[in-house]
Length: 308
Image 1 (spheres, rainbow, N blue to C red):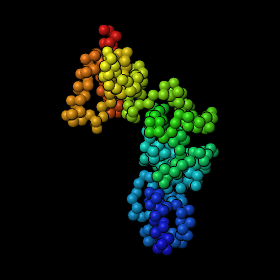
Image 2: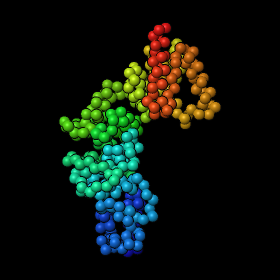
Image 3: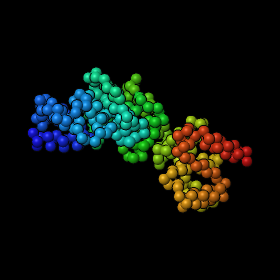
Image 4: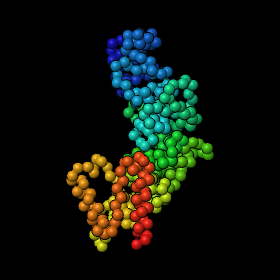
């Protein structure tokens, strides 16, 4: 039994401290031995079909693995949990959200179950020892539980990190997007917008900035805009409204702190002021609070430009 338990512990190590009933069956650890392991404090039953090796570090990933095993061999981490596994916007670690053909009808706190008759092999994968929906299926499903703004950020983040492609997402939409299927309408609208303008931002926070500008009714800026004046290159900015000579730059605390960074940023702003460009710095606080003050400043600059 000692060697068998070593193999069981190694299996649990690969699954964030969790071991499934089917693992124990393969190792020959029957119900009588399991009860002995529980009695001596080596195992603890977590959910139907899943045990935790006592002493292994607890984690949200371990809880998620257990939730998947509780749903059967075809259950997958999905929706916000699948997004969390891949660190996509919209991901939530404090819940366990799973997709399966049919749930066992057990009820657990923090567990959200989605039943679907269409879970194809092409929708399934394993990431970090966790059975999870593919990136494409995850982004499709997010439209059913998150706002379109969050889904848009998640899609762009996946594009930026080369986790998927437009064609792969569109193929998933065509395969799953029958009328009435949750998530289809949100994904279709977003992909239609990308088909018209395929530019990507450099970061998720930059994407949030563009969403705020759109919500406030401001003109759509050009992302990653390079400023030229009289044949001289004044550098690239995160976004710009060239018609009003407004440059937007996201001010990250990581890259915009310290004396050298302050001097560099001030020099850049003075150069742009010299050719009658206004620079609007965008901080995380602006994004967190909805950007009302930032957008009011932009409207003021536009009014002054139109009055000049």
